[in-house]
Length: 220
Image (cartoon, one colour):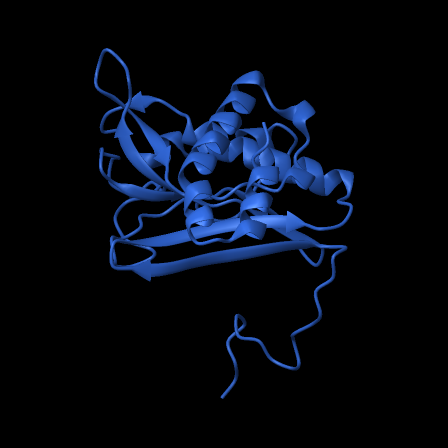
């Protein structure tokens, strides 16, 4: 049998180093829900291109996550908000921006998502939001969160997203000079939520090293 491209093998596997980017796509199926979260990190000194590309992927993730839009809007209609920061400098990615996520069901659950043939978004739906950027043979970036479609605080019935993945982004890869004040405010509010929800649980489990890491990773 030939191993699949995603399976490790002695012929294709190699040692990771702290001098490169590392993309990890994680998830699990639990009795109260399914998770699908991707983060990209760099433990060394990223190149200017790596830092800018990561920041623009993050900007796209934020712009779509904080978007307010009319009810019954199709995901394909708003998908470009996740690409705009990359498009501004002639970059793009070749996969979908997000997919439906089941409740203790499929990780990729039809028919929710951001493609042209997905159903309109409604309150209560779970979808991933996952822009990225990839350079063959060099590095890959993807930032994926699970988001719940919720009613927005508007006079007419509009919708927005509530990100339920509570995992910090890599500060080492963010170029703050590219972010708008609104994007920074969103990021700080998100980090406050992470601290409020995850911090006490780490303390309860006596995971002090993880708690210290969380505090450092969610500084304003």
